[in-house]
Image 1 (cartoon, rainbow, N blue to C red):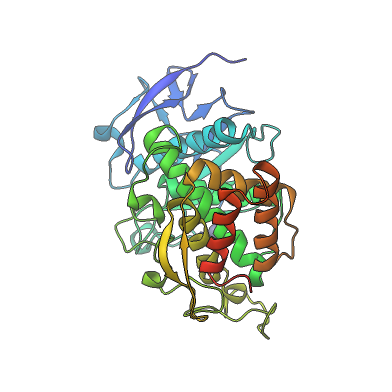
Image 2 (image 1 turned 90 degrees about the vertical axis):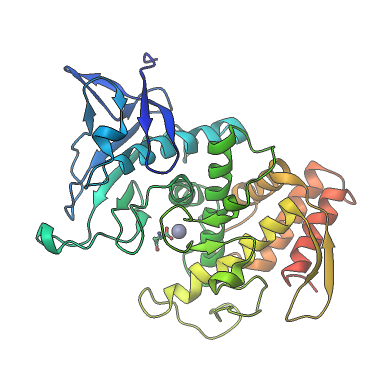
Length: 352
Ligand code: ASN
Ligand code: ZN
């Protein structure tokens, strides 16, 4: 057990927050040894490579005066705090010890760039990703530096998926892999803002990447507003190899629309959590009323389906069956929870 060394961080997106650090020489570094096997945040300095260079501070007060600079160094404080909050979300809500449930160290690389341009030509890498073992954050170009808490929760959510359902990153399973990451991104954002997931939910929680000074990447409450489908086979649905003829490809079709068809899982989770009246499940013309069950219950149902039921090639119909099975096992077969889960699937046009 390591001593808790608490600093304060003026983050770029989430105000002033406590962070855990480690003394090194006469400085402090972004290494938290209090959670699992640790949380560490490194500086790529704009290189197209992972280098284990620490951010450091002389007095453990990581202030805006020092870190809100042209290099957006304060974004590293969001990445570090975001990883800590994500760890706490999984530990406190689901008793899950890091993404592998064995305390795996969470390593983040900030100021990553996809090309080694000369600095004056550097446009900033406009993405963040989980590379299979570590988090990687670009400084952004269209977007601001991609280290907001929902993005951290999204990327680490991919790691959780790898260690649970391991949904294949293409076709419907890939859309659900992306949807699960958005679900965990939203839960982490809500948890980070309020310290729990049982209070009223700020509408911005349902937007992904809304802090990055650009239109949000996705909307879980209204996927159509971001040109994503809110219903299975509905407007904006990308035909996949599961129900169509799409051949998954990284560059031409985003593995058959994984960042698009995620809208259906996203909207199902939103409706299940918040409820919906008279939701039209176009292209089928029926409407559904869904009583919201709140995030504590919706998140548990989603998580246990991901952990215990879904398998790599799962489809949306499999997710419907899995979540109804989970709700039936926690509550009773005809409980309000099971009815809401079922009707939320009808509302997004999954189920006959
Ligand atoms: N930010 C993207 C994501 O996590 C990167 C990717 O396409 N894998 O979905
Ligand atoms: Zn993703």
